[in-house]
Length: 101
Image (cartoon, rainbow, N blue to C red):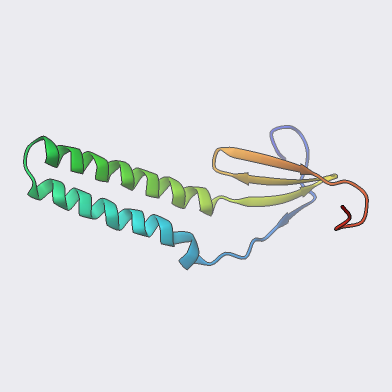
């Protein structure tokens, strides 16, 4: 049961490609590794800045992995609910033909 007391009628399994889901975080991790490696080579404040920047990129990449891994689509009464890490969107379903406009 969700936090607002509405029970989901069904949970729709989403087709996911692990390669596409992990491409952007993987590129961020490679960039972070290069920044951290550069920070170890360059001494002084510049090296510290590169290391900190690389660490921030690692945290962003981990957040992206968690966000795309937690996406869920539930069907509730007259509503679709899309949920992911720290967010929730609801789309009301209305009667009528699809594609009229």
